[in-house]
Image (tube, rainbow, N blue to C red; front, side):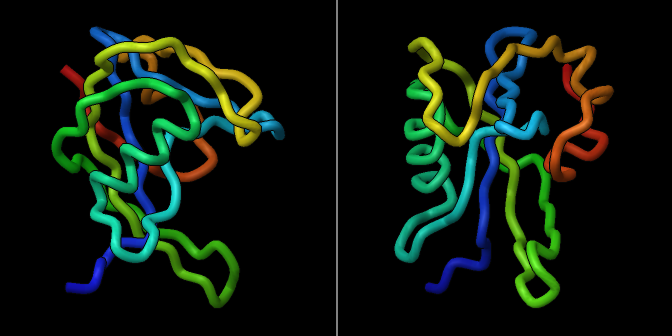
Length: 123
């Protein structure tokens, strides 16, 4: 069966905080990226989180669908999934310059480079 999604992002939650990555240009991001041919959404997200952060997480359910035009002729559609932090220290790859753990009660006030969170309500 063909994969219907191009991209995937993860909300990595550690108790009452969510991992936020910062790109070299200063924009905020969540871990994630492209779903490669033959990958499931969850295996793609596991690979991306490992590559971008080195963290071990439990990938849970999808919480948001999103889409955008990367270029006028390149439409991207994806999913954001909830992830529970299990272990590890963040080890960034070259794609991001820093990170921080944002309190859940402040997450909706942060401005991300894309609308991966929209108006999710965290409990």
